[in-house]
Length: 437
Ligand SMILES: Cc1cc2nc3c(=O)[nH]c(=O)nc-3n(C[C@H](O)[C@H](O)[C@H](O)COP(=O)(O)OP(=O)(O)OC[C@H]3O[C@@H](n4cnc5c(N)ncnc54)[C@H](O)[C@@H]3O)c2cc1C
Image (cartoon, rainbow, N blue to C red; front, side, top):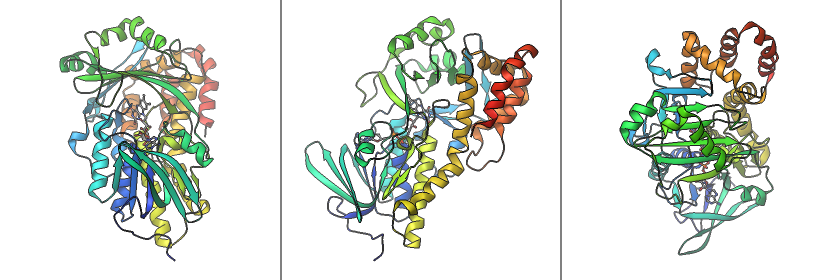
């Protein structure tokens, strides 16, 4: 008996090759690629298509590589500049100095919708406005029980489940007895303003990365510009509105950026302020019998970069590659045969980009009690064109393929700018960062 079979067109009564729960960055991409590769796929997404999704929207150039193109309408604006800030310093890193941009800025409701539409066009069944309630994994398949407003409960059956529920579906991990990634908290707040405000006040840094240890201890305060709008937020072990407000109101350089802006509610959003979670580390085992964990459900975003859209999409690509290989080799999707997925993630992501996040987190957040190292980094950027060129290159570097140790090179350049006496103090931190795996 072949393991993979194509079935009819009725999602409630037939068995698919893949059932995906979650239509965010990773689930939508997986549905698109799986359908493109001829796999029968159903995707279940709790929200209506185009509903708000909490995400700052930074999408660096490297994130485009190796994925099918998206229409221009999927993007809000070019991300030309980035402005690292600390209480003592600020600098505008401008890609145009090196004839490039740093990436794009996205609004996730539009971006995810584009991917879901593309998946549907390729033949995936997209069931949005539908919540997965229960999962059963047996020796010959998976069964997902779903509920949707105004419809009777239904069951979607498949050979394999892709769990792409981000950080909002951990009860499904519990049901399956699967490890959940460790998380930190975040607050994101949405604002509207005039495009002139974006251009004149905020675009000096299309995205601002503010490190202040009195405000947060593991991730930045950020501001990211969209079109006629922007968002701001903080990441920490425990976040609070009070501390968020304190940041906005206390540092005059930050306060000025908010002048004239009003809080905004996007379609599908109940309040302009959302408190949510970001993974802190990947799970040890992103696979089990008939199950693969994708994106944030596998802990693939990281608080230093707080970027997870690329990681989610890359994990989708690897998950689909794994399934295609099993189909071609006619192998059953048992845990042992799915382990190749973990190896792919390690090779292109966990030991590359995420390792870079871990090193930077150590250096700029964990090693010292204040933000002096971040201030040295900002000052080094101002002084050293070679460092600026390297950091700009990081935005477009193909992390999945590169063998360059850009973190080491950048570390060396930053270290050179530290005053001699302080070098003694900071040298052990740089050495330790170099050993982080
Ligand atoms: C405040 C904040 C700012 C961020 N900023 C950036 C950034 O600037 N750039 C970047 O690249 N990344 C950013 N990230 C990270 C990024 O948003 C995530 O890493 C990314 O969304 C992960 O994609 P995913 O598909 O794994 O999960 P998600 O995109 O979260 O998608 C999961 C989906 O599963 C659905 N779901 C959950 N449970 C169920 C269920 N039971 N039934 C049906 N559907 C279900 C949810 O509705 C959701 O749509 C940010 C995250 C946060 C929280």
